[in-house]
Image 1 (spheres, rainbow, N blue to C red):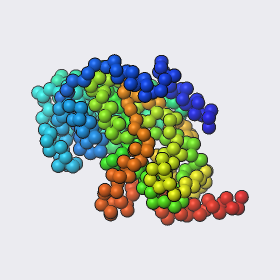
Image 2: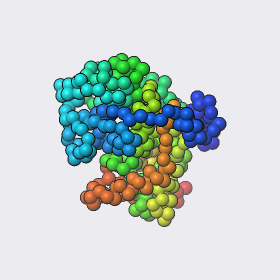
Image 3: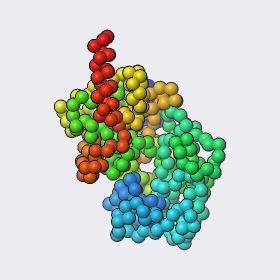
Image 4: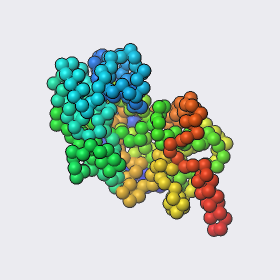
Length: 376
């Protein structure tokens, strides 16, 4: 375990000249040398889903002017004080943006290159910077620890397809990145987040753990707790994207907790310590979970065992992003805030988690694991 952690740490941090200093110290020193920000005029493509609202609020809190462009279907009552240009970006509606000037664009809603090309044809002469929200899914496989932004991206047989599936999602996002850079070379920020979590997350792919552990009792926990995990709090991501505009941070960046920093044990113990000290974590070996068809990621959210095509799971480098201003709030804060948001939802929604192990299957697997231990 220690050798694995040391290898990942050395591989990912070696590119920072001040690696001997705590990352927070490096960032603080860098920020002291940065010029004061000026108010920006920002166009956000989307802005009312999950990441969008947190980004809008971050921009407004920092004194920037924000215009939204979206279809007006998701949370239509949100941000009534802002100018919202109603339109579908994948149609001629995008021409509504012509002859308008903005300092920068944040694009949270493009999934195939035609979307980028249509927007850029209208906007590129009237903006200075284009920030595109991509994904770490652009990497076809995660074959080794310490992967960074230079890792090759996935490809697709038909680059013109607009059918977004599990197979096409990553390669299409990679083509979007390429299209944006082609239109505005040197003035594009490509942000590749991993699992985005926090208040407002409708997927429950992180929230399962705070909710399950708050419930108490014996909680099935995956592996031996040493597997690394990665995620990004939506508020940290939104704030950093605004920072990227303020300081003209361009280029490509993985954006999540840095590889090798957090284990699944740290996450689950943070849930226990924060929400229910009486809950008991029962760590079940990965081979046993596989035997009983407990699926990583979907039934055991956040967690992927590092092997085969996912040997680099939990260890992808985000050093470049942290060296350029990305910050990370404490895991206990993320856990508590996710829980406090979730319990404000209607009771019918709270009883229907969209990720995680069902209570029935969890009980069945725990019973089998106890029997296995007794027999051996």
